[in-house]
Image (tube, rainbow, N blue to C red; front, side):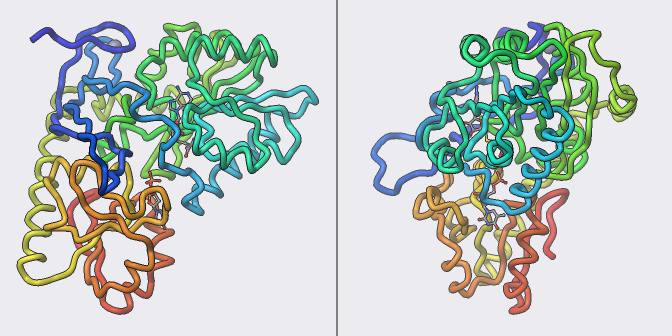
Amino acid sequence: MNTPACRICGGPLTPFLDLGRQPLSDAFVDPGQKTEEFFYDLVVAVCGSCTMVQLVNEVPRDRMFHADYPYHSSGSSRMREHFEQTARDILASRLQHPEAFLVEIGCNDGVMLATIAGAGVRHLGVDPSAGVLEVAREKQVRVMNDFFEESTAKEIAASDGPADVIYAANTICHIPYLDSVLRGVDALLSDDGVFIFEDPYFGAILEQVSFDQIYDEHFYLFSARSVQMMVRRFGFDLVDVELLGVHGGEVRYTIARAGVREPAASVASLVKSENERGLADLEVLHAFAQRVEQNRDELVALLTDLRDAGHRVVGYGATAKSATVANYCGLGPHLVEFITDTTPAKQNRLTPGSGIPIRDHAAFRDAAVDHAVLFAWNHADEIMAKESEFRDRGGRWIRYVPHVHIT
Ligand code: SAH
Ligand code: TMP
Ligand code: ZN
């Protein structure tokens, strides 16, 4: 087999983790569905030249992002607050002049842009998923139903002029063709503008063994060092990094045209700490892969024991992340009776690949379940606060990040 090549720099990729055959993580199955599910091999690799961690196999983008894309960002109150605060910070720091213009890549249901629109600031949200954009439009958010890439960026620049801020959350890591995106940013960003994006942090994934952050949509697992090397290839500098507590640990990267802004001290300090931690060292990556296997074995053993002892186990949160866990660990309705999720578009469907039914919250309240696997572990605080009754009646949470345990 030929050595696969890095999607960013063409350098040699070394695979270090094989999570097996996986379905599309957000393709919840209608029980009456006649068409076969789509599967691909989920293999993670590191580039020997630019350190970028990435998937070896790319899923065609139209299979993932389309009119029925089920993820709605506003499903978590913590995330609603996070994006409202983000919008207010950006408004105050960068969008004070009357002609200011912000473009969001992957605006989803308008969770961030609603605040920008409410402030009367010029903006445009770009997203290929038509269904979520309907919700954004109801919030008076101006949208463009398309994939952001070089051609769409040039169209926006021609119709609206340069953007002071280009913003994206949990979207840039979803895009294999970042060369086109960064040429688009170059075409659209004003001379002293900033491109701000936040995504799951590979350093946090390693530390917490949160291997379920790895799935089709998360094509890249960024670090400060790999982002810095990537943006330099396109005439930009990484000028700031900020660690965020959301989604299990993210980093917000701020990019500017090369030479325009002095990088903050936080950049060099995070890159240094990544080098010390060996974020791109094969030895460290292989040790991570071993811990992933160990977590899988422990989770399967625990769920099997609980079932054999007659317990009723369900899942909480039909996350995209749970597709990786369920399919890698071979979970199915024989081990997890159903998964509860508040998203209407996921309810009464089956989890991709693993066929676990998804039920609404009433089903969770009604059923005499005694254990729940917390697939939405990144929203743990919010969920624990709201589910105190489950705990009070003796219910137990099964966690697998950072290690398998019952709480
Ligand atoms: N920003 C939101 C949504 C994240 S989900 C949040 O943080 O919660 C990822 C979103 O990116 C989806 O709505 C998907 O449709 C969109 N997306 C995927 N590829 C894209 C592209 N090339 N350009 C713009 N949006 C894209
Ligand atoms: P996410 O981890 O990708 O944000 O997905 C979280 C999923 O969990 C999403 O489908 C919504 C669901 N969810 C619930 O069902 N109940 C909750 O209280 C929260 C916070 C999320
Ligand atoms: Zn590379």
